[in-house]
Image 1 (cartoon, rainbow, N blue to C red):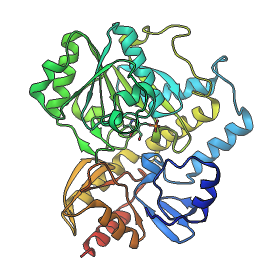
Image 2 (image 1 turned 120 degrees about the horizontal axis):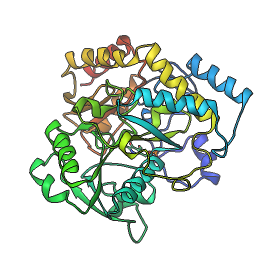
Image 3 (image 1 turned 180 degrees about the vertical axis):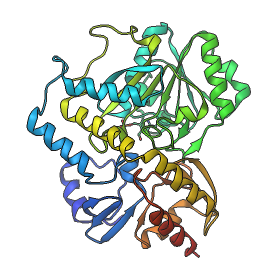
Image 4 (image 1 turned 120 degrees about the vertical axis):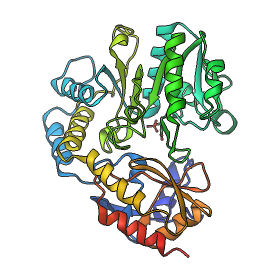
Length: 387
Ligand SMILES: Cc1ncc(COP(=O)(O)O)c(C=O)c1O
């Protein structure tokens, strides 16, 4: 990030509200795992914030988009569409076995907003438990469950329901926080913005058991961790836990704005006509993208690729400033012996783009699932060169 505005930033500043800290490079085009910028080519280990699951300009995605745009550009949920039914079927097939019903939306926050609404309506309870350091989005309910939001940007005078933040990984605190007044617990199994911090298995399993015991629903936010990123279809499968609701977005559309709420069998009748709604969610273009992304992940064995490349990365650490690693698969936090900002700036000099996090010592990697060994090697070499 730089304080000097480039030409595009100056042009944006004329009419766009200035709410984002931005990098100073100017992307012109992108292909595979590389972004072509005015300044040169970058290896993209940030992936548009975990969105570009198939990298850029994947031919299957482009073809599917073109085909759908030429066939039926838009219809709302007022009519049933084969393309929507197909996307829902593919997503249900991709999700854990007992989670077969989906509500399609446009973003991660909207998915969480609706998941929380379903939970509160279903349980008729008014309290939600979230986890310290978790992030769930910027809307009223999702923001209410986001750690630090109230002190920093939430701005609304009240949250729509009471929220308690359970200390991260404190198994002994679970029973006192989650009780018969709890509608739902919402958690990211691997906390993305917190630096790809993976919650402990004991903690996540303990929460799941407690939810069952007191009749609270477990909402797993897989907006960042889902769709193969962590080396399984959804990260919660690595914890051997089946939640009541999974929310997902980002990678699901490969760059097209989509989101989804996936519910377990026992919740399929929890909502009725008029309880939920959206104009754009589940539109034909979005659905064509969901189907194409899931097809490519399956056909190109991208989950196996994530596991293979992650094993290679881990086998070659520590290196340079990297002293540890957290996270899973392609949601990885490199724990550094110096500020992550400095490491990211050094990597940028080697034309490698990485993410940051709310942990000042953690560099976050969220690359396309198509990343190959040569790209990991390039990262390792660049890290080794940092003095
Ligand atoms: C875990 C998690 N949940 C929810 C969101 C919000 O998603 P969106 O920005 O699509 O609303 C994000 C965004 O970064 C996220 O990382």
